[in-house]
Image (cartoon, rainbow, N blue to C red; front, side, top):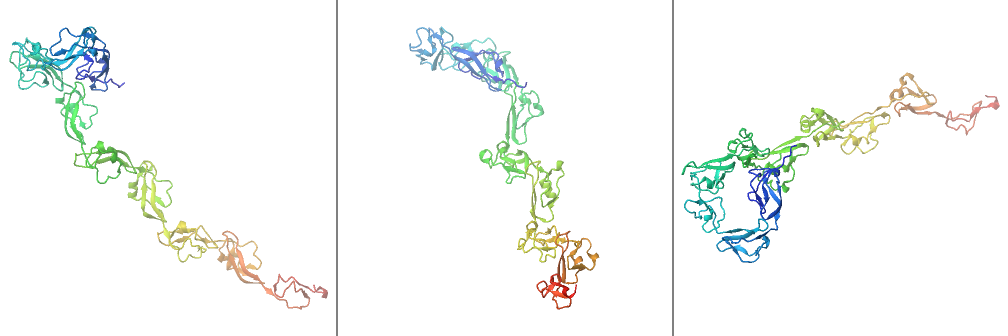
Length: 586
């Protein structure tokens, strides 16, 4: 449901080949199925096809073509016509082959012969003697008047167009009553109703019906009837017009007085009702013209279509001309609306674009800390978050130049920028727990912790993890994380070492705690050294060496092999000393 056949009206003049008998196709607008009375005109044949292209339009016709009819000239050629005696007879001939017919010297125009039916008589038209029935040129006998409607005279005096009226003649007076207009009976009168009722007067624009005339007595004022004001309804689509209470329902144009121009339009609204039962015709309201602001408001951008839309100029243009030129700026969304409140005296106002809402990434990127979001699902506006400054740079980072949040897609995730890692110098004294091992990676200027971590390490005897803290941009690193290794003594001390105070080195201890109680054993000399190379491992010992001595032989009971016990050796190395068994020592 919902689809209705369009309605049309007959054209003001029927096209060649078609005639209208006066039934079913008007007055007013009807659909093609209800349009009766249109036939192929005399001399044409076929089936009429009626087409209505769109509501409140005009019917177009097709299907009729010139018929192959045979006719003969009338026995007496009418006044105004001349025949040269060739092509049109004798006998019956086709109208297309009828030549030699023309307008006589007393007439003017172009002679045309039409054949209404086969073996009939040609109807001649197109030539006149220069006057029409009803004109001032007609000279009618006393007691008769020119007849209407106006037709071509067929004699030199137009007396063939005169009739004798049988009713009274009345005057119109100064002006016709509302709803009526003169057609062929012009002036103050007097007029006979029998002469003027058909074509002398008509219903004025905005009225419909058939004109009726009444002349109660001779020389009285003419009374008119039959024309009623058209009733129309406000159109469903009326851009620029505001319907008022007086225009609700079906109303006449004079009673529909509350139509005004909508916001964005200027002028004086007026209505007319050309067709009874149709929609009002609205006029008088024109779209306002404005200029673009020198600087686009926040959230809006020019779409760059000005070059392709020459109607939207830099001087003044309408909303319709310029709508496609405006779009939402990056990080905004919506449908742009333009308004122009005053014609030629203001700039366009723009609405419809809203700032995108996003959520923070989870987890936050390195260098950022804080929160932002009070809307549903944690959604927030970037402008609100940056104004509240609840998202900041984390420790070890600084704003460069400032924290920035960008929300490219509404409902998406913020893109965050603006925090850079602090850069610091190494302290001149690293302390006992740290070393650069000769590396130049973190020298020669300030560096970030990430850059310096490869150039600084824990000193031997210390373990990490190494921590480089650059609390202030262009400040000095605070080193941390390296602590002294803890070791324990092995189950058996190496030869040459003994612990003077065993309790001081029980369990895992720092190197200093164990070194203080460590001494070289008898037969050894030096300064004992204790190191802890691996945290949680065993101590390493060094510094105690075996004493070296020389033999003072001979000594009773002992023999010495010079090779096995050199002149200066340790006790262990003196393997060539033995008892003098031969002399009974053992």
